[in-house]
Each structure stands twice: as C-alpha cells, then as structure tokens.
Image (cartoon, rainbow, N blue to C red; front, side):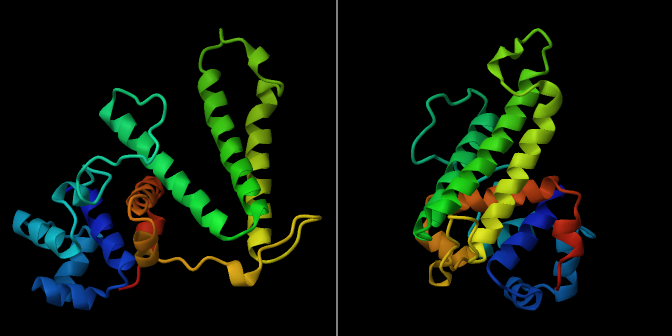
Length: 230
C-alpha cells in the first residue's frame, strides 16, 4: 500500500468526527488493526480498501492518492480559467486551487468585513508574486525591467509582505482594529466544520479538503502523525 492511504483514511475519519473504535466496529475489524492501518504499520488487502471506500463514500483512487476528488471524477472549477494546461495533473491542480480560493472568498464575504478580503488578497498576491518571480529568475536572460523591486530583495520583501498581511488578518479576525480598519464583529465570525462546509459549498468543499490533504502530505509528517489522537 502506498504512503497516501494511511493518512487519507485518518483524515477522512477525523473530518467526520469519528473515533477509531466506532469506525473499526462498522468495518468489522479491531481498533488495534485499524490503528495499524492508519499509521502505516500494516498493509491491508484490496477487500478492505473497497470496504473502507464504501464506508466513507469515496473512490478507491481517492484513498490511494490517485484522484483529488473523493468521487474519483475530475474537479471542475465553477469558472474555468482562460487557459487550462494540457497536462492532466497540472489541470487538476489548477482547478483545485481555483475552487479552494473561490470558497475562501465566499467565506470571507459572509463575514461582512471587507478588510479581511483585502488582507487575504495581499497574502495570496505576495505568495504568487514570490513563486512567479522565482520562476522568472530561472533564466538569467529574462529582463528584469518587468519588476520594480531588485531581485536580491524580492524574495525577502514578498515573504515579509505576506507575513504582515497574515498577521493583519489574524488580528482583524480576533476582533481588534488596525488603524481605521475595523476588526471582525464576533457575531459575524464564521462557524466552520467539514460537515458545514460540505453542505454550504458542495461543489467547492471537495477541492478545499483535497488541497488541505495534499499540502499536509508535503509537510514533514508531523501534522498527520505526531498530533493524532486515537
């Protein structure tokens, strides 16, 4: 079994707020065996893959990390980007990101505070700028006159700009003002959970869940393993 399977079945269980004991009972296995499957200590058979896929209502490809959408079908963006890559992998990731960002802005809009969207946009813009500038700099022949900030400073400056925006966003979300920018009214704070997100944004939530799963799988492993509680 690949390395995706243990982490995905763990995330699915936690997203639904289920205990290992209840899931194990539903699947007809011991809690100890399910724990071993979730930790990647033991490999399961194909019959268990099918059984747990049916239990969570997802595809086997999703459990094995071969599909970004739980159903196994391609993720479609509400508004398709003007240019979609011919690469199936790049296209899926592009659509996933568009969907996740659309959901993010929808949640921010419901908070009824425009300052939140401004700070979130600054963070995303700065992160994109940094990624694109790194790509641009890969060929020393590319002219630097596209940018006003010198390349020696661009990385640090854009990273700092992103962190300041993120700090501002956190401050505003805590209800505190920043100068003339009013903090979020506590009555407008979003109530979020996997179940509520899936219900409110059925076309977008799968992309958000997949984005979270994929980036956590790229982390050093501490997020998905060391902090788990059985």
